[in-house]
Image (tube, rainbow, N blue to C red; front, side, top):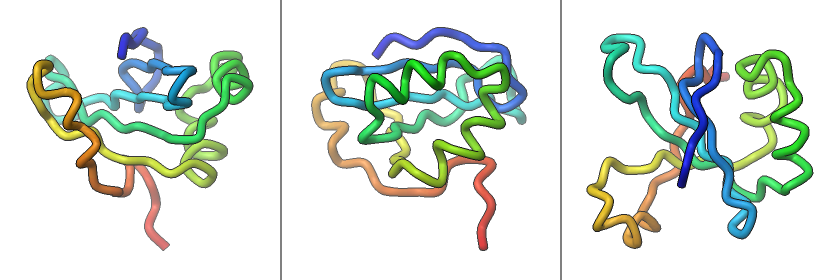
Length: 101
């Protein structure tokens, strides 16, 4: 999935697959800023949700306030591009910055 870099203290880039209704977020790697951070897929993310997300002034605030509480997320495993069709074997995890209760 193609992602676009964004200005955010938490997020490096975002992408969207309208057909599958998946929002893809690449988080910043705070320990090694020159390397990619973890990538998460948020599922059941409608085109309307994507349009609203892109309008937000603060991506991180909207992510924490609206997306994380309302959409299932899965960390995308680090796999080579040629193995990408097997990415279905993801495991549900808590996204970076999510607060535990």
